Image 1 (tube, rainbow, N blue to C red):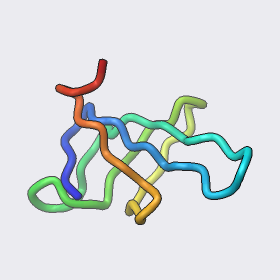
Image 2 (cartoon, one colour):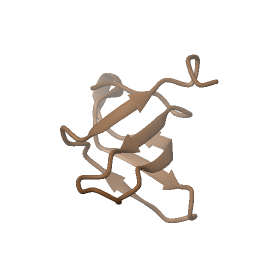
Image 3 (cartoon, helix red, strand yellow):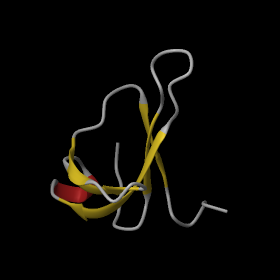
Length: 64
């Protein structure tokens, strides 16, 4: 998984009724775009994230 600053990180809900959590990657802390990432979520919360299998990266050049 590789990302750049400005990409979106989407954590998909794991159970029925749980919404996806979307955030903007504000810092890439790994080498060559690898995790961990500092992410600012829609609610203003910011934290470190090492994405798991329920997560996807939406690259900023493909976000509509």
